[in-house]
Length: 195
Ligand SMILES: [Zn+2]
Image (tube, rainbow, N blue to C red; front, side, top):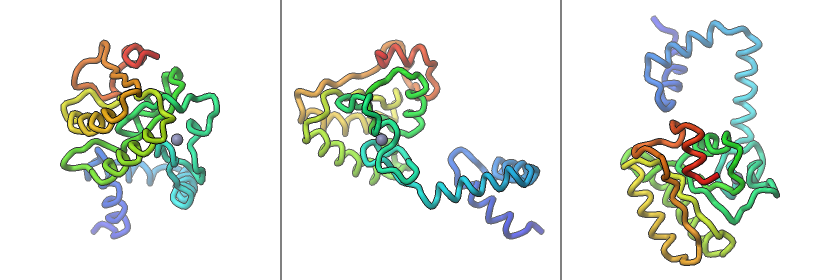
């Protein structure tokens, strides 16, 4: 008989993306074998995260208690250049290149049947409002180079065509079609994004 607390933990882990029940159990057993110090650290950091989690009001990247993330609050970054990305992990990938000096706008996913389209539509509305304010001069379409991203790109283009004097960049040079940003090698990514 498996302890109900174990079952509850497995149910939670099973909800994480790309984690099935088998991996959930593996993670669980791995965790039980770590020392107390590690387990407490895990608990502490997650409890800080849960109590203080916020999202940057400009780009929607998660923050701890801050209104703006470290990128958006950095005066050296050019907020007139905005790179639109589908996911937070794309920000991490592009930031690892240490070349991009603009800001980001995280859509929170793609318009797909199994994703929460409401968040994306809401964010596209906010993007539209932001463009109306007239401070953005350049948009880089940093969405995945996949067929799945096409409906989202179409929605974005519908908005962008209202703003004729905004420069729109499509990174694509050297990028294999079907590529997810996080799986493209840094050199290719840098060249495609013209960084
Ligand atoms: Zn931000």
